[in-house]
Image 1 (tube, helix red, strand yellow):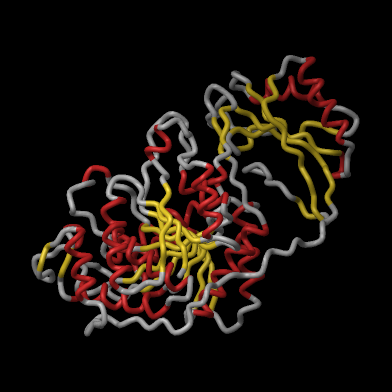
Image 2 (image 1 turned 90 degrees about the horizontal axis):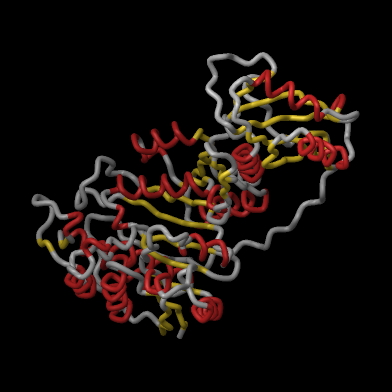
Length: 478
């Protein structure tokens, strides 16, 4: 018997969890549960993380968590517990199958069967933000080679294990050439190791448009964290309802399973919520721990229930539905269908669903790293970049000189345009002569000179080359 950590969550969470547990028990899942309290009550008790040390210990001991949606209170500096859990436990892979249930659930895309695999630990979800001037705040987008290699490899291994034919990558590397560019580069490197699987890349905006228009052209899609968060919800919704989709969060040591929707406090306690997302998350959990026969039985019973037209309010249709039911009654219908299979919808058969756990990342040899300049970020309330350049050129030294000023990424000096609107946040680039490696002491001299000339330097970013390849962006207009 396997012990599972259990969090009933907030809002509709307790209702849909109780419905899911009734199905698991009726199906004979070989599980015991250790319940933990996370979410809104913990936040409001004074714990800004939404989870206690004891709950962390329980999750880390049991390795598996089945979690209902939780509520993060608005304001007050509360951080998303979902993001914290994924990152703290190293749950790098978020897996969201999105399949249409035509004609029993209304959809414009009857042949959709897509799996979204989302990187789960980094990108803008690092949550590193700063207000730097009166007018400008920043959020750091962090993309790492280990993060890219782990998620892209997982996507191809998932495709191979489950008989998928194609893996597609979505990025925005036409704009973010360093961060998204690394993700795309790693995708191409990993794809070359899987010649049996078709691979393709789309810029995320047109790729998302194509997915919304013709999802049948996609199979497995892998992408960085933010895009994956947005696209996976869109994909789930266009199958018929975001309330149908379950989610797996897989790491090297632990795994978490959940519905992808929120806690919906406006309908809490009314017995109207659709428990299907959490049911399908629980099915993914059963496959992960090797109880494939139970997972198969529940999934087919759930499909049979959908096919019978027993529907909760969110998917009820006067033509295709036969009975409008509540949360509890829907679960009871699934229980009554255990041992049966759908007749029109494809039945599921879980032959080999042992956990897909990849080897730990092996760090690559260090490259030859040289510092060749510095970007000095300045808070200045003027509007004429030429005036600012006159001030900044006083900071030049024998190894570094001002070569570029940008404002929100647009070059404004030299040869800027008067039409360009500028905020009070300026990136001022000092480059070494002829791109030669410089002493970091010279960067300190730039900062000391800024103090001398009363220039408000708010941040610096050293400019590096790696094996002679530039590791920083140029200013737009260069």
